[in-house]
Image (cartoon, rainbow, N blue to C red; front, side, top):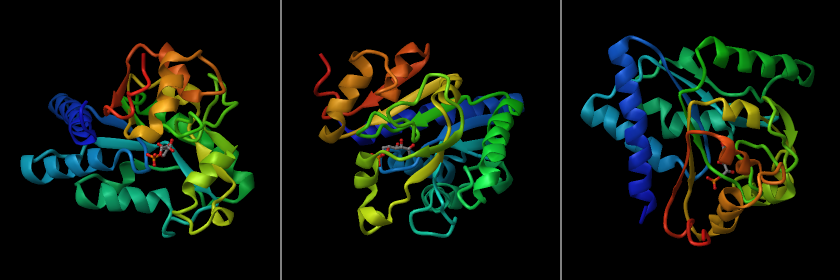
Length: 243
Ligand code: F6R
């Protein structure tokens, strides 16, 4: 796409079409959602579709990719707060249908929480559409270099580059949590349809590695090459280094 705005509207339209289809069939719709700066315009467009075109999220279930650990939901950098402010507070979704990895749990409960998160996705029939951004390390979710194809929802250690990129949100790198809970590469690859969004020249190098480089755990996003329905949604700047 020429610009991020039209790219975002395209993704929002795909999501809206699925939501309407599922509502007509009386079946739930399961969305996998990302945070960060990239998908905010997709969420703004979904809010607009709700307000102006009556798009209802009543039958929608959502699973977010990740959350910092530890993290309280009311903290400024919490992904719970991000999702409420950017999407959930402005639509008619049932809060009971919203799932975000829990950054408040004691460490000994995280493993069981991750297993339950995976199970809940399976019980709902799997993710229909997964929205992804991509980090400078090639991460999708917080699957940092070294994350294998079979990895599942788990606690991970954040890469130094990722913590540097988050430093401004936390008012300094020292305050960025060292860990996070993320869906795995294997979890993401099970989604029926994936849209990986990347906008701006800062993403051009990693986008080229992910799309045209070897499939490798060094660049977790490269595993999307093996997915039958994964689409990279790019603006011109992010696509600049593709051959
Ligand atoms: C966020 C997530 C991350 C981001 C990535 C890009 O839930 O899973 O993979 O998508 O770090 O972040 P932005 O969009 O801020 O450049």
